[in-house]
Image (cartoon, rainbow, N blue to C red; front, side):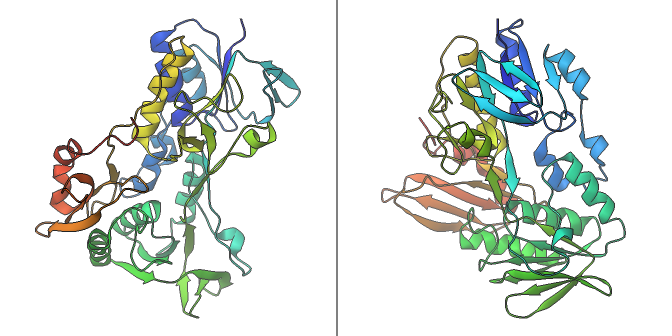
Length: 381
């Protein structure tokens, strides 16, 4: 019997394997990973500094322990070079591995900023444990850190770094942070709270160059402003990994396109996690990933099951200003209304009949997220 092969040992790959083992203890299972195969939760990377957590402390079980736990063969430091969906195999170095079913849990890559200057290669990003270990080592003596990007990851790192005692500048092209997630009133509350924590904002601007300077780096903005920094972190977004699928003739758009069974355009090939585009949705968050893993495990175990997304509020890890946001599905008619501004901000997205379609909560108002979430329509029925 050919094995089920999972490419990727991140949270998506390992969660799927664990869910599958709850349903089928014996089906052969192979996990192929380009890194060392340690188990860890990627969302923890952006708030580990203030807790004093090293990369080793963030990691759970090592690959051999994971292999034993999930009764699988885990191939570490192994990069899949080719998928052949007709012959149903993958090529890794000189080895060809046949599969009964193939799952792409490839994750996403950080978007690299378009910069000039002689220090572009010194701009860091944190997308895995190895990145985090390198970043942590580089900032040991760094007093001043510039973050390129004021989205979710940039704001979480800013909160973490400032709490750990670093001076932080954020360069962000929009007029307020988290502009893709938050309405203006909620974003302004976050902006204020992080400013009070010591973060300096450069909103409405982009970085154009990063160069070596006498003391660290010079970050030049599009208006000519120069910020001096000891380290520069890029956090301008993630791009689903689709190249391996594209090379195999599998349909992609923003991510690897899958149906509600999480099956790609190639029979017997599935995708989940940050690389997957499910019925038009690319949701790089933990709750969608968990929902995907449960239903895909059922499908792989012989019970075809479609994914359903209930309302899934996103929790932004910025303790200086706790945030919960339920995004509004694209094309929904309605408007944002500020409901309250005491002990935080409560902004509701309502339709013409005052029905709740989304919300953004900051401060103590974030505590009502579960109550409000029950009033929301499902994201994907």
